[in-house]
Image (cartoon, rainbow, N blue to C red):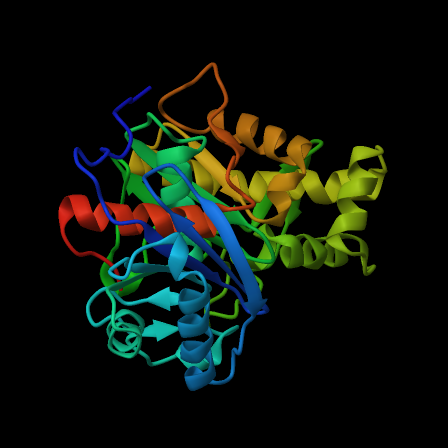
Length: 328
C-alpha cells in the first residue's frame, strides 16, 4: 500500500477559514479555525435561481458570524457543479444562477475577501484524503455513488484538477460491458443513453437511478432503489439478480480507475455508500480485478459523508495558505 503524510499543517498561525457547502436546497456555513477543525455555524436556504440573492445570502452569513473568524478570513466554497480551473467558470444544473459565473473572482469582488471554490465531489475527496478514510494514503480516488456517479482524485492530500475541471469522473464515457456472465448464463445489457449525450456510461446504471433502470430492464417492473436494495438484503431473487448484474458492470470501470490512478484507497460517498453490504460486495469484486492484489478493504464507505463538503472546502482554504492561491 502506498503511504504518505496527509496534508502538511502550517507551521505558524493562519487565518481561520470560513467555508460554505452550497447545495441545490440549502447552504451550510462553518468556520475552520485551524486545519482539521470544523465548527458548524449556520444553515440557510439556497437562492438557486438568483445570483444577487446568493451573493447577498453569503454576505449575510459572513457578517453575522464574523466573530467566529477574522476580518481577512477567506471563504472556501463547496458547490454542486463543475468549475473550470482555466477560467473559474461554473456549470451547475441544481444551482443555475452560478452557471457561467467565475465564482471565486465574482464573489471575491462582491464580498471583499479571497474566495476559493471546488465542486462538492472534489471537496469530499479532499476531506477523505486529509481527514477521512484516505488519510495517510498517497493516492486517494473518491467514488461518488448517489443519484448518479462521480468522483475525484487527490495525491499527497492535494486535489488533482484536470482540463475543464474534470478529474476522477469515472461515471462518463462509453465503457460499460454489454454482456454479463450470471449463474452460467450470458446476459446482454444494452448501452443505455446518458444525460451527457453518450451511451454506455457507468452513470446510466451505477447510481440509484441506474439501479432502478437496470431492475426495470431485467424484470419489467418499477421499484425504487431503496426497495431493491432492501429486497436484495432480504434475499429476494429478482433484487439479487439486479444487484449481481449491477456489481459486475460497475466493478470493471472502477477497477480500471484504480489501476490507472494507483489509488490505495477508494472512499465511497453518496447515498449508496450508506448501504454497507453493497460497498462490501463491490470491494471484493474490484479487488478481484485490479493488478495490485490486496488482502484488505480497498473500496470503503467515506468517513466524512455528513460534513465532507464543508471540511473539504476548509482543507482547500488552509492549503491556499501553504501552497499559494488555488481554487476555481
